[in-house]
Length: 375
Image 1 (cartoon, rainbow, N blue to C red):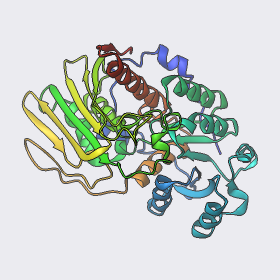
Image 2: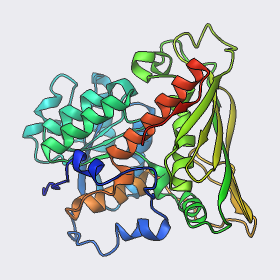
Image 3: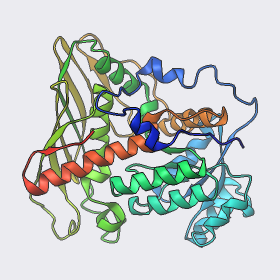
Image 4: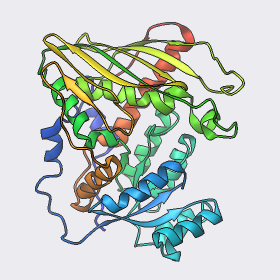
């Protein structure tokens, strides 16, 4: 399979990926996958690394893809290897454990590894996949720290493979409309965005990795708040310049011993827009609202798996319900199969930018100070 000759990360930073970089609107996004020179019958052979809940959702989504094939699995649980092999007809030679993971270098029937492990394991298994010559999709958040993200980017660049982050909402039509309305100032300058996401997970097992800071990197902010940060950035097409934040007192300190239960924050952007968000592990909330000079637009549900309901001050949204995971995988696969570079807004560069913001939010909440976010 042809590997992309990506420009180096350092060169990209030197060309100015700063606060004014625009993320794609619907029309510009489609340009990445229009008129690609795709092989007529070629599919991207993908191995899932980590077979938890979300990996199961991804596996079921392959049936709705056109350019992707579930070719292999990597798991530390022998019983899962057996059941997945039977369910998805996985060839024995494409089944790996974490111990023999590096043997992927000898397998020409796997093109890409999709890392669906706990956040704290993303860096190791992304770098090992790259060293085995495989393209990588890694779930978000990309890693526990921005520094880890840089190591992952550099490893993939050195290996000549592409690195994408599982930003499914970039492929979803309601969110592409949010990008268009916000970035093109359809209702004038956006002045305020409110976006919040929360689930009640108080009945979670105490052994769940989300409660382990080493594996998760944090609590509600890392697990859910990243969706709010992402939507703020791609609707405005700007990078935030500063943040204030607050932890709320824990209602279940017996469960949330190592990670935060609730957190609120306020992002300031170069245009003057203010984005306020809350994320929580003790109740359900899922909404997005943007107020502009001449109108508004909103989604509720907003950043979960949907189905989404949206409207603007002019009309109700009427977009089809899609398989978000299938659309994401196909969108990435088409670019890779054509031998092209993935657009920056879904690569490790985007994941690194998100982690810079998440780290600043934590610092602001811990210190009680406004924290400047370096571009």
